[in-house]
Length: 396
Image 1 (spheres, rainbow, N blue to C red):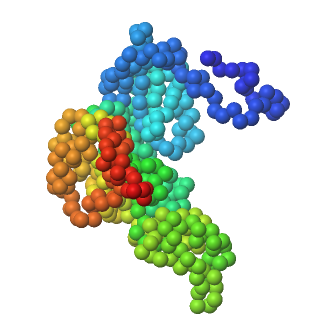
Image 2: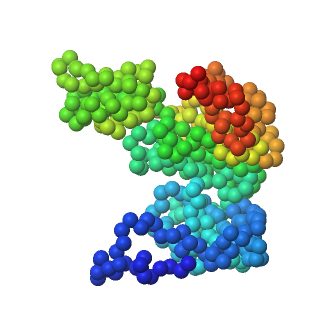
Image 3: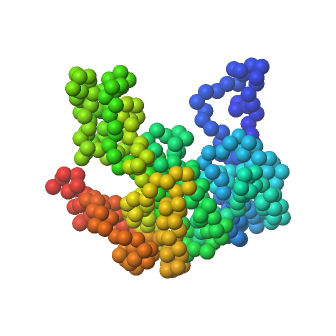
């Protein structure tokens, strides 16, 4: 399928309405495939990882597609993108793609092009610090790029910044990105608050920014800038109710024991700020995954309830992550993910080997946990399982 120049043709600056079709959505993905992918679509026999950051997919026809993966970032400048596109034009026939974890992938059709591309990528460094702009790696039994949320750049409910923590963390884990020296792949995720637009609840290691204090109430301006009914309705736990100050001004009251620190009220009312430099912290979770390999998918479990929010390099977070990763690397069996390792040795032993304190607050007491077991293809539906569902839904 070639790029259409008719119905979906190029924009004509002299006649803005020429050939205009609305609500057509994005261009068809086929138009962005390299020729080697188009010619062998649906015919791939197997793939291998040749070295960290380099994969090969072999077709039934004998054709090979070589992928060079390098680390990227969620927020890219225009200058960075231009540099990236220039490399793709010169070494990958203009084709480049992004993975869901913000990695960058170039697809070429020969090993000679792979070597030329790697040599070029190694030349590109940042002016300050000299770090690689396009480090090759992130495949196989190692640490791949960290998927994360928006942080202070875009989000108003963030408890911690995302970009700076991810940068500091990947600096500390860089040796595991450019090698495959771990028992299995390790997926690290980071969310700035418990609303989790980055969905970190099923990761090998998950970092979560956490508000520990309820919103502050600016009584003097709340009635001037906020729709009080909307602020009340925004709370998912009904912790907010109408109230009045001693001076008779309309305001709200917050039932602290009901507040879950989500920040929804702040979204509707700027007079209810939630961020607090001293109270906000980072929570570390571990053991989650979405894969069905060896064991069913599992949710991450809290292993460290509090790490200080020391922006911008977060030394405590980096050290704790390396501590868990080193213990896992030293003791896990080949192909075991962190959750599989913890399940085999027992979570008590997991805390002991990672040199982490264990408290009763870390015990998983989610009352509907039995229902969450059904996230796997390995689950067997039984009469007892259906009974739990009926009971949870209030049926006899």
